[in-house]
Image (tube, rainbow, N blue to C red):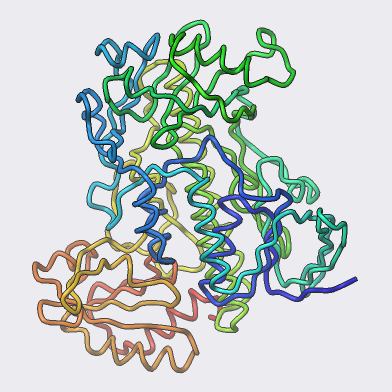
Length: 541
């Protein structure tokens, strides 16, 4: 049997598995991905790409293409405008008895969301389906050297102290081969056979119901008079929700009751009946393209790691769709894990750095899943809100980590009651626009494949210390001075205020964009201070 050697084996070629492969390849890690399906699938639930996810995709060069392929999300109040721009999608959630209610203005507003980022990010969220994004991820991962194998079944694996030995099978030929890897990433979905085989349990509220999703093409814009909206709950004998999938296609989700509808497969003809009943559109041409049933659930794995196996995405946490956090949270999993695996493999971080993946992502994943659960239940029950609900920007971008991979991070809620991205260790570096070489760059965009030290205009000692500490430890580190006339020009001084330091202070940003260490002012020995901080963050203290 042929044996393939690689650093990381990724099982699952959905959005989060492909993101894992791409982020690892971005860090220069050999990665091998297997997916049992022949190609990427048309998925009916994931279309909202958060500002934080767009930051991550900007880092691999995909942000412009996704914007071109997707729709721009704008404040929900614009939904009532007739014939609004087809490039815009208001963040409005409506309720109606039939689709025609939207066109004649009799639909009622359940939520009118604002623009998500609120100045916290250089990016804005986009509405773009997974069927468009996944091929981009494959292309970019392969360009960076990742091995992507579809129509390949993951058969079995064993792990030992040094790595994982897996058996995979080409489904077209039946030929099996071994893959020997240092680590295995399970991105094999909500039912995750790998998680089940490890005996990892799950917590949460469990199954909340079943949804029948119907992807169809129809000229609904002519019925709604060009009005644009994110979601409309259709409240009638075929109650469910309707949302736009792309320029011409829509998704209808029917809340499935087995007692009423049965448990069997649903034909396209029967699905068409449900769509016509729910929408009230008896004569409009409707082309049903895909029908699938899926489980609506709230479940979080008890642990995200078992030895050399890591869980990401739906294998780690299953969200109700309200809020659109599931796929975005999985992308954050992949990004957090990728730089840590790369650091360990390249020898500039200790093995225990990998323990911080669970320490950081599990609390955030659990809190995010709970927020999705709260949104789903409040919308379904129509009770108008819940005191524990958090602002969407807090959930997508302002989440907070606490682990051994920070100096000075504080224990507390992963999702704070108010949005505070203020330079504290454990938070993503505050966004500020800076001028560089005649253009502009965000502080968020400076870290990708290395640590970044940012200091004020009087911070030359930090720059000198960074060079010495990085050389001694062998840690990749870039350093910049920020000021009115510096290489990174901050003309209005907002960066210091946003970050909570003086012109003599500094922040050390991890490769994932999170502040690992902060000094509000000067220190006696910057080189020693940075060496200690880097040693702590990289588990070499």
